Structure formats: C-alpha cells, structure tokens
Image (cartoon, rainbow, N blue to C red; front, side):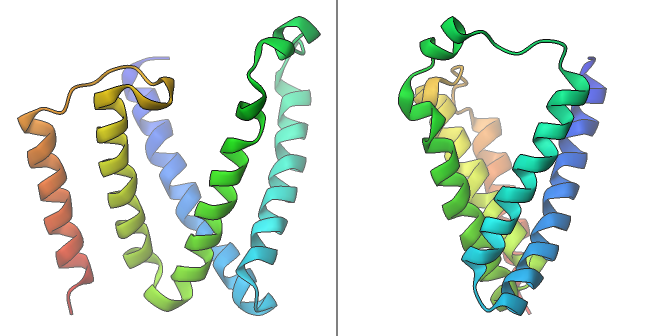
Length: 149
C-alpha cells in the first residue's frame, strides 16, 4: 500500500475513533457508568473483529507461532485499552468531544515521540528532532486555542 493510502487510512482511523468515542461516551452517560460502555465496546469489538478475521484471513496462526508470543502481550494492550477508553468515556461528557480528543491526541503524540526516541515497547527508533519539537509545540498551541474560550 502506498504512503498516501496509508495516510488516508490513518486519518480515517482517527475519524472512526472520534465517532466511536462520541457514541460510547453517550452510552456511558445513559448507563451512568463509563466502564459499562467500555465493556460494551470491548465485546462488540471482539465480535466485529472476529467476523472480519473470518471474512478476510485465509489462515490462522499455528500453535508454535502463538507459543512464541510473550504471555504479557496477550493482556497489557487490553489493560491499557480499557483504562484509556474508560478515561475517554468519562471525560467526554465533562469536557466535550473536541477538547477530549485534542488533549488525548496531545498525550498520544508526546508519549509516542518519547517512546520512539528511546525505542520503548519494541518500537523502531525515531530520534526527537528540532522539527518534531516545533511540531509538538505547534500542536500544543493549537490545543490551547481549541480549549480557550
């Protein structure tokens, strides 16, 4: 897939995440429990992902490959997902969707710049450059503008 298509896919992924955050925050408000909305999201994600795998995948990983995966990788992503999604669903009704998304994106960008600089989480190394720092500062200025009244 070429770089432009991957970039469009990433952009659309962000749009879809903002849409799901809005729907699920509303679900959390109606249920009066953001964690219940997180459970609903996780369960429906499991169902949809299972259907997509059945429709798209031609083969299933074999047992020897599954055994090579460290045990913690089966659970830590889910833990961070539940905490992150729950915090989103909790904060959207209090902050609004654009404020929450802008602050969440800021957290993601700053952490990802640091994590890739040091190669944390088995990520490829990408040094923090002056351009990256300027970009992060510009984004933070934009967040201040978005969140100012």
